[in-house]
Image (cartoon, rainbow, N blue to C red; front, side, top):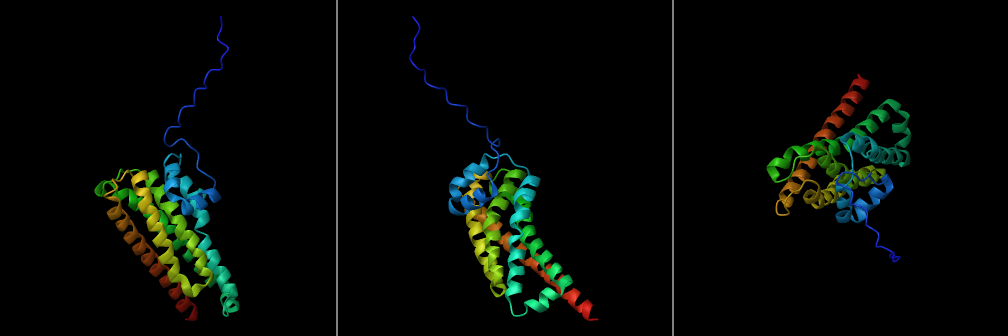
Amino acid sequence: MSDDRPTEATPPPAAPAGSTPPRGLFDRVKNILVSPAAEWRVIDGEANSVGGLITGYALILAAIAPLAMLLGMFLSPFGAYITGNIGFLIKLLLIIYAISLGTVVLLGFIIDALAPSLGGTKNGVQAMKLAVYAGTAFWIAGLILILPDLWFLWLVLGVGYGGFLVWLGLPILMRVPPDKAPAYAGAVIGIWLVLFVILQQIGWRIIWSGLIYGMM
């Protein structure tokens, strides 16, 4: 006699690490800023490449800072003068974009290079995930450039909260022991600040040399 009782469904096997497709951009931005601890675990299991992280996420969000600055210039008393000088304006916006993008992308390679000496596991994709998704805070803080006089808050708020995200993500993505995560995070934040200052100084030198050359 056959048994007609319903059998319990066998649950599907868990997806292997690195096989889950990434979230959409807006969901990722919201979740990494609002519920970062849970989101890092989701990110850990996602399939990514360094190129995909840069082109599909970093290149897009890095544009927030220059676009905010452009809007701020249109609203400023000197907007007509600045926006009337197209060559200068394009150069300025490209430099802001390079600072916005370059600090975070370079940080990804540095996080990977530091891993063996700071208790982590060297992995280029995981390191770039950490830098790019922690960089979300830095890029969103670029909205401050609508008020150009407050540009310093971009650095303070962006790197401040971004550093907190790095600290949360290090044990999950880079397999850092919890007791070593603060030192690793501190090193990353310090390097992030240095990269910002270096790229900023290079950018201002390019701008001022162009202005001086144009007046000669």
